[in-house]
Image (cartoon, one colour):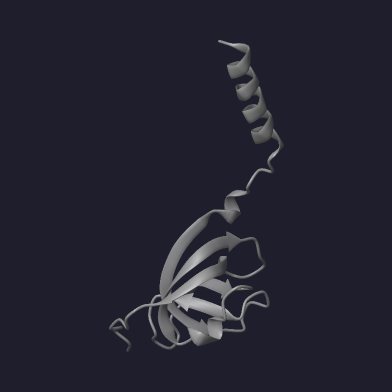
Length: 109
């Protein structure tokens, strides 16, 4: 191996070593469901449920600092973002992007 190659490898290794580690909770993922206004978690103003039926169990609390979620409330949505640590009863999700989805039929009682 030449000195030039060794220098490039050492520079690249050093650059990787000084980058901050990204915690697992910051991994991006996509979730979907029915977004509704919800005040049961003080860290989030919205909740995601599987269906639009009243009393449907919440499976994510949702907040965003980039997207106006009020435009998507009471609709089926696809959200891209990351799970965050929080004090909610269920997982807290920070939405970075929201997309409306077609309404789904729900077997409401």
